[in-house]
Image 1: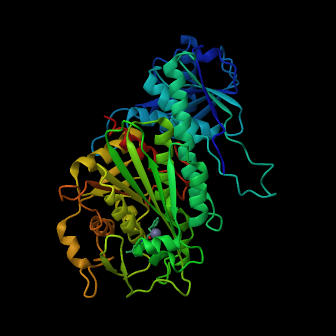
Image 2: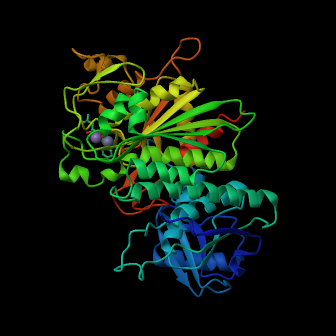
Image 3: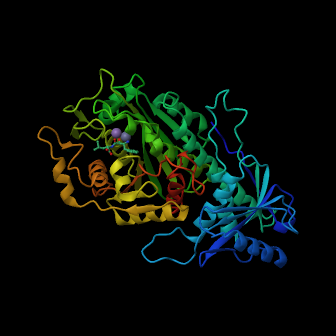
Length: 511
Ligand code: BES
Ligand code: MN
Ligand code: ZN
C-alpha cells in the first residue's frame, strides 16, 4: 500500500526567500489571460516580472495549466510554478467549483507536476486559514502514487510523490496551524487508504482480505466486527449470501463502530463492497469488466471515512457497514429466477445477476436500520446509468428525506466533491412488482439509477415511532474510478470519492 509520503509544514517567511526546489503560485484567468492572484506577499518587482512572462508565453490561467519558470530574479526557489485556477466569475448555466475548491485542485495539479522533487513552497492567495488549508489539502491529495505492484521493471525508475509541502503565510507555532496540519494529514491518509483499496488488484483484495485490512487499520476507538459466510447465513443476510455464493472467496459483513462519549447524534454509513463484479451468470462483456475491481469503492469510502472521523475525534456516533462479496460465476452462483430472503424478511426475485450491488446493500441498509440512527447514508458504485445521467465526475444523490439529501449535498460541496440530486418518483416502484416474491430487484430500463435507489428505499426500516428512517443514497459509479488522465488532485484509477463528503456529512451532525 502507498501511504502518505508528503510532509506538510507551515512558514511565515516570505515565499520569495524560502529555500526549496519550487515555489508554487496561483494565477487566474482574466479576459482569457493569466494573471497572478492578488495578495501573494511577493516583492512587487517579482510579481510584475512574472506577470510579464505569463503574458509573453500566452498563459491563459485556466484550471489545469502549469507554467514553469526558472531563475526568476529575487526568488530563492530553483523553479517557479504558476498554476491556473480558472475564472472566478460565474458563467450562467455552468456549475463551477467554488473558490476554495479551485485552489485545492490547482495545488493538486502542482503536486502532481512536482513528483520526484523533495520540497516545494506554496503561496496560492491571501493566506486566510481556509485558503491555506485548501492549498495543503490539494497538495497532499495530488501527491499520490500507487506503486505497490510495480515489479523489477519499474521499481527503480518510478518517481516518488513530492517530499514536503511548505504552506506560506501562517506562523508555524500557532496552535491552530498545527491542528490544521494534523487534520489535513488525517483526512489525506484516509483518502489514500480508499484509493489504495480500490487500486489493489482483485486477486489481492477479496472480501476476507478487505475485512482483515480494515481490522488492522482501524484505530483503537473503532470497534470492528466481521461476519463470515456462516454467520451471514445465520443472521438472515440472504442478499449478501446470494451474491457471494458464486465465488470461492466467500462474502463478509464488516461493522465498524465509533461511539464517542457524549455524542448527541448518530449516523450510519453503508458501503457497497463488490471486490470484483464479473456480472455473475449475466456476465459482463470484457470491456465492461476491466475496471470492475473498483466496485468496492463505496465500502472503501465508508471504511476510510469512519477511520478519519474517529481519528479526528468528531463528537458524533458513526457506524459503518461494509457489504463485501465477489460477484462470480461458480457452480453455486445465484441464478436469474432464484428468490432470496433479505435481512428484514422481504423476499426478492433475482432477475439480472449483474444488479448485485442493490442486493448486498439491502442487507446492509436493513442492518443499519435496526440501530435506529438519526440518519443513514449509503454509498455505492451502483449503476452505469448514473454515469450516463451525470458524467463520470459527479455523483448522484437520492433518498427519502429532504433534510438528509440536503446535508449529503452540503457535505459534498464543503469537500469540493461534485454531487447532484435525482428524484425518486413513486411510479417507478410498480415496474418492480414480482409474481413470485415481494419484489424484483430490477425494473424498467429507463432511469436505472433511480430504479436502483427505489429498490434500496424498500429496505430502510422504521424509527421508534414507526416512520421510515431518514436516508440518502450516493451513487458514485462514475467518480469512484478515473479511467482517464489525472486532473486536479484526482489521480488515474481509484479516486477516494466520497470519503471527504462523508466526513463533512458527519461533521454536520456535531451538536
Ligand atoms: N458495478 C456495476 C455498476 C458500475 C458500472 C459501476 C460502471 C462502475 C462503472 C453494477 O453492479 C451493475 O452492473 N449495474 C448494472 C445494473 C443493471 C444490470 C440493471 C448496470 O448499471 O448496467
Ligand atoms: Mn453488476
Ligand atoms: Zn456492481
